[in-house]
Picture 1: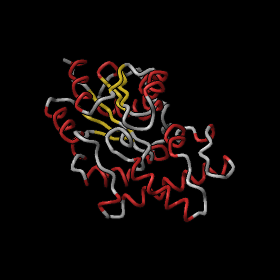
Picture 2: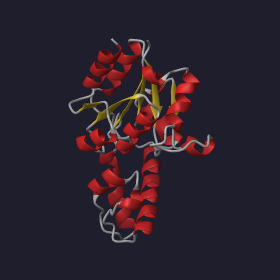
Picture 3: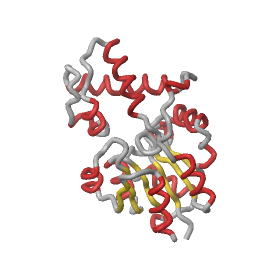
Picture 4: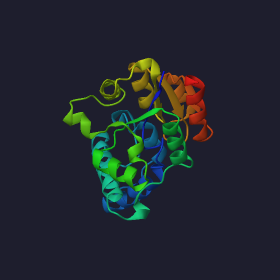
Length: 225
């Protein structure tokens, strides 16, 4: 059995939140808003209607500001300025190359728009390692539902001829884990991104890595031998 390893991007392979915190500070100042609760945004950006980010505005307005801050974040990442492109987490590139060399197929399912994703992957020299991707752009282009619905993961599996029992979904949020569970794949939660261990456990993660990215590789090898 040849394993198919599917990765989320922000908070899983890209250390995105440090950059996003810079964007939040600039965005809040430009819009004369108090600086929001970054931890609340990390925990609740997938379901913003259920969370108060302490931005000093009504929930409806806060969601609009969240979307606009994400847009600014994407614009920064496409600016061509190296200090505005988030870094890969330590060990990610070597780990991805190693998995590819071992014969595993790699994929991406992310809420990030396609343009910023491709630019960042090219910048870090890892884009060609992935055999298929699904992005936030595909939600409209393909009519696929967003995480935690399984649509994007399932369509990627169909395109590449992969089955649930040979697929691991790797991500840092409960949405990633729930998407994998909804697609009947194995799921691997990592703790260096947005959601803490307990949320990943509650979402149903089959396994959790809370050390470093090398242990993602070790887990994949342990599953597929």
